[in-house]
Amino acid sequence: MDYKERVSQEIHSNAACIKGLARQIGEHPELGFAEYKSSALLAQTLEGAGYEIEKPLAGLETAFRATLGEGKPNIALLCEYDALPGIGHGCGHNLIGAASVGAALGLARVIWEIGGQVTVIGAPGEETGGGKTILVQEGVFQGVDGAMMFHPSSENLLMSTTNALDAYEFVFTGRTAHAAGSPEQGINALDGVIQLFNGINALREHLKDTVRIHGIITEGGQAANIVPDRAVAQFYIRAPHRSELDMVTSKIFDAARGAALMTGSQVSWRKFEHSNDNMIPNQVMASVFGANLRALGVTDIEEFQEGKGSSDMGNVSHVVPAIHPYLSIGNDLVGHTTEFAEAALTEDAFQTALLAAEALAHTAIDLLTDPALLGAVKSEYERL
Ligand SMILES: [Zn+2]
Image 1 (cartoon, rainbow, N blue to C red):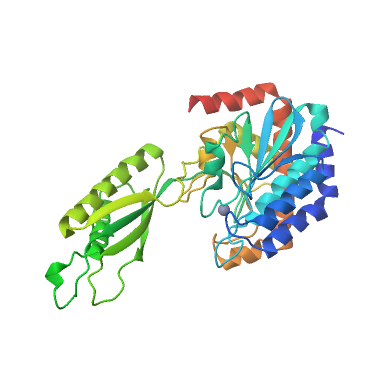
Image 2 (cartoon, rainbow, N blue to C red; image 1 turned 90 degrees about the horizontal axis):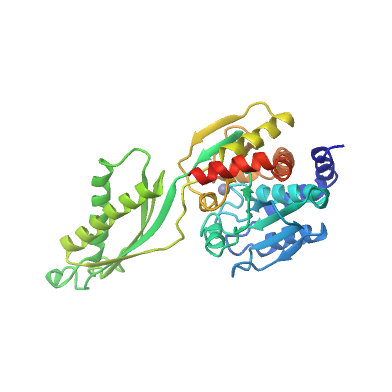
């Protein structure tokens, strides 16, 4: 029996455990950076299979690193396990953690024979705070030769770009006054926010269709008869590449300065969440994953799409070769909905997690055993 067959056999014999992880995490959704039970479940399962566990990791209580084997190459499998406020696992991250741990259980059977290392990285807070951004900054991916994970979807897709994202909060400050008795004494901070929205809306005409800017007002005054002295807006700003995003954000800063000037208010801004870089999928790695999927019987596979969303996996793809393929858990599903959360808890979804575990593990085998292939993966990454 070859390595891939033995790894698959190990994954199948652990199927109940892998599905159990997906079910338990799915039924008990935990928000980003508070995934205490979910991260513990995944880390304990890996510890039981002989992995050495480091937890907490990079100052994050719900992040972990699990390693098995020694030397090079070092292939990383990423786990996500955070849920969305109000709708639970509407992005199906319960399946991501289960699939990567499933792949790791399979690889545990052969890694000492093959040589090299398997590293499982538990990455919290993808939805709300960019846990992988922190892990990248803290050097967690140093020494990793390739990183991968799967993401549930309504289709099978090998490669998708994602947008780079900056999250900015703008705070306008003015001066209170009686809004009817002495409005001339006031400086209206809310007008500053409104002019910022107007400035951004005027800017849209001169931006590419691929740019996304969407915001909310989080503070807009205390009472209608008081001129607001403080108003706050938060925006997500996205573009396909970091350089384009920097150009767009600099124009938005100008709009903010202009809004303050027009209204006599003061403005300051800060990032309220970590920035995401755009995802650069490694084409060589993705094609190996695709070949393994086909060998496992999957036929309807799309190669490439340009994505509109953002992910902190983008940051990972800037420091190591990385893939983030999608596998279907049901047709016509829309991400970040209760329907998606329900679909992520079905037998079909659990079967997709098992399929993902096998395809990830087989891809890791290819990278661990074929130095020429790993060389091609790295030279593609280095050309970027
Ligand atoms: Zn997601």
